[in-house]
Image (cartoon, rainbow, N blue to C red; front, side):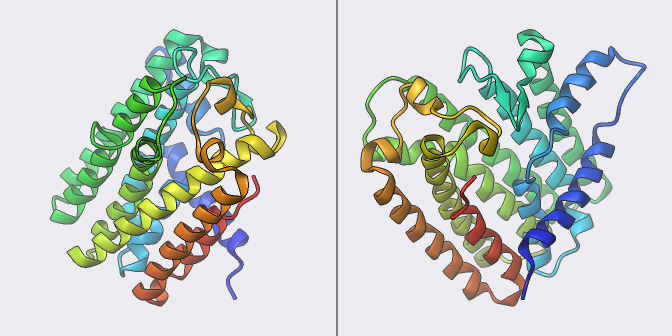
Length: 295
């Protein structure tokens, strides 16, 4: 039987080492920008998105080393989005992953630039991998991640989320935000890994669908935890949705109904992994964990 926590710990350590090397300390440039980038990038966390990239690649018979640049790039993109999300003009949060947010340490100006730096370095990291190994697999992986993060993915979800702040939402609009702001990057992670590992189009599509279901379930659970958890458990402020007057599944359906919806989406994603075979065992267990976690 798989020891999921130990497996995640080992995979996380592998990713941490790669991230440290991907954005090394610098002395020849103005050091503050690299300090700010590394402050948030190396702040810890479960490294779920890069973990999914590597796991998806291995699940279809690929080598994790081939997918590693894309996993690191995805985590850089995710971190940049968190830095910008925390800014006063966005969610105005003081804590992230258990410590002060980037702008509280380096100032708003440098936090913006640190986010920009991570985004551009992510693109350079993926482009470098494509130059070194110019195949449909590497370029396809880069496209999947860029698409998931861009104006048809995470970015447009953030736009609608900000635009609709303080306004009542219907379920269609809320689902649009969740599918784009959260699920698009998880979908992109699984797509990129599968493509990098040489999967066929049908398999890539199945991985993408699982990613959407996991992403929405993950966000619903995150909304529940914003109400039921603590700052110490989450490592970030609680009741932020209420503070920012955001409509969530909890405000629309209540906690218990929201849990039921998340559980259904999780079960649908698990069914996809079961159909894909034993190679997806880790992704299956990871999905169960992500969609039932208590912090």
